[in-house]
Length: 486
Ligand SMILES: [Zn+2]
Image 1: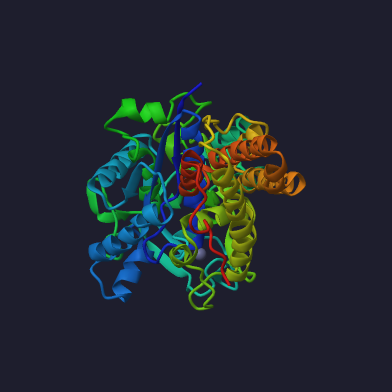
Image 2: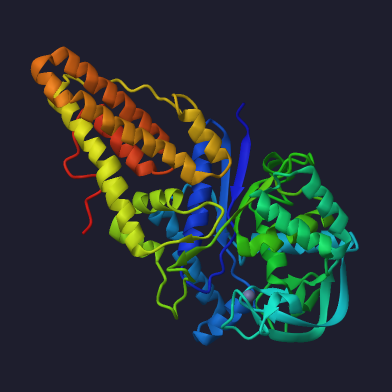
């Protein structure tokens, strides 16, 4: 039964160029958006940029740039990913948009009305890299383990606080009732443990005099909203809350057991996405998300990618060299969806040559050369959707569990089977001795290739169109689909 499916990525900070980890997240969300669309569902896909907070404020000042000009420049680099990675998103949220600002302020008022916002003096250790308060137990040698190169700041001021602690039992109940609320199960376990230990109310404002780059607190311009409190609200401002409630409730159903959208996030976002955000929604009397998929990190030669280590792989440069679909293929198939994955340029090239230059590219050339040489007319293509065909349900069930690598493995298994059939039946010899039989063999190969092209739609949309066009025109590609790289 067709339904409405809402998907969203996190919003990356605009203090650096898009990195491969975000490319992974947005491509994963795109694969699923295209897949559900293919099945006939109505899909709304949101992504965007997080443009406030101390990290961006400091970076813009260090670069000697005006704040808005600085975030505009970076936001446009992220918007270019739409073409670079062939993304099908419907909405790009910028947290400096007036609409988003008004929504974040209204959300604040709802939490305030619920009695969940209060003022308090405090002294806290803060990692600007994470934009998070850190407890002593979360620090290694006095530094954040994710940002060992950044000083942990001591903050001492009167701030507004959010009554996070009030939602401990409601959060635990949510995790208990919906064991698939967080995917994979190991991450649900991790957040359950964190919440069970006890929740500290967290600061949701900073003195505007110290940190002016953010959204003003309603009725108190001396304070600026905490960047997470502002940014998380984009998930519902993108679909119309609070001005278009009809639209909002269609994409974020009010029934508690259904909940709202499917959110993608990295493992460093676990606390914000799966505990802070649902608690904020509970405070504003709104349902939690439907599901949150937590992916791992991409590392390079066993280390975190960083400019100083010189091991950063730029997704845009990768696309310039190998093409969009090669990068989408790699992220889907050669990155573990839930664990950390080590990626190097050598591994990328190896996978490209073995599975795209050979593998798929070679198969398309062989089959279509035979078809154009020996068939009178194009093979009629029936539009087989993913869910049909022998292995279609297998691709589907993996995709719906976010097992992108296993889903696409099924397609490459099929490519391997077709190669084996060509080797066994030798249709290029059969046509010389028994033309009718040879043609039958070729038609069967083209049918199978058409099925592969259909299955490729969510993963490699442009390649799927190229193969389909070749079949419709009954011709071999004039150049290899994926030229070999040396
Ligand atoms: Zn940090």
